[in-house]
Length: 106
Image (cartoon, rainbow, N blue to C red; front, top):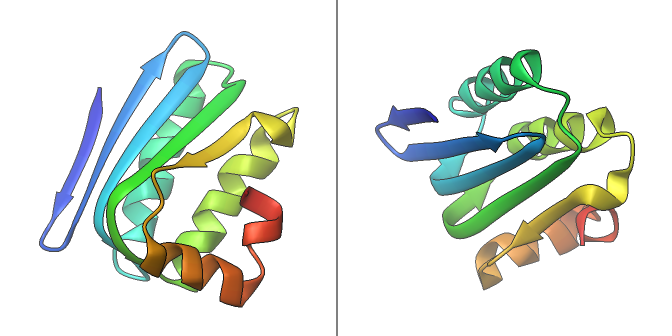
């Protein structure tokens, strides 16, 4: 439904009724995270989102700016348990563990 394509980042965002599915590729960092936030805001304006799934199979790196966008998305849900991250690789998992976000997202 929505797509961001930058040099080192892609976000494929699909909204189905109240379910948002996001597939990330490349690097979610200070440069690319505002684009993801803008896509999220666009989807949020179209529907009351009750469930979010983030597919990180192709994500190589996430910075604190990217984590902030994910936190904004999670906090917007009425039930934070309806936010899930799937297919996380070892590099991204290590970043989440180092920052303590694994206890929030996983």
